[in-house]
Image 1 (cartoon, each protein chain N blue to C red):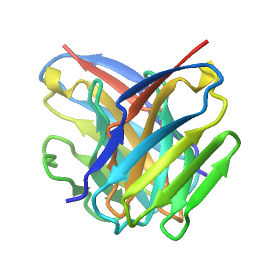
Image 2: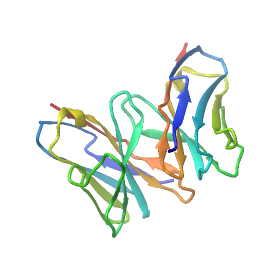
Image 3: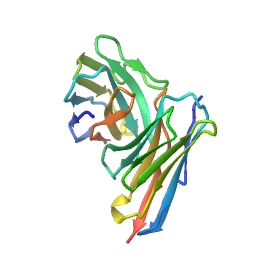
Length: 113
Length: 108
């Protein structure tokens, strides 16, 4: 299994600003994923981030709104840009194990006012 | 398009009861299926992973089954405890898709 940490754990931000969320893994992994969990909802995959290549975004998510960096095999960032109250969610990163099982970070709770 | 459904959406049972949570999916072409629990405001904790070639997995009081032909998985919790209260999510990997979750409440 992998141990994953995220920063910040929570934040309250103003409309129109941007927030960058960091995800750190204790081992080298090929695939990292970013999810959004809106209030009372299940998880929705935003994008898959592989080191050395552009992130692959799911339908409904675009790079301009959610730019992702993956500078090495243990770290990734997700930026939520030009935020609106609709972006208030929990953002989670995860990594895939050898059997494609998912290990999750503790999440970042974002509130946009 | 793969769809994942969890029934019921919420469940409340008295302590000590055995219970079953259901997860159904529309496309049997999956790599594996994973069950998670999520405590309020927290991340996800992996409970069990069933590979596509397996029928079930057990961990302590938890038993998960997988029937790809019928597009179903169940999570069986034996002798439920108040500490089992959480939201339980199933997820498929081939394309990572989560079910909507079952919010479980165990009454002392």
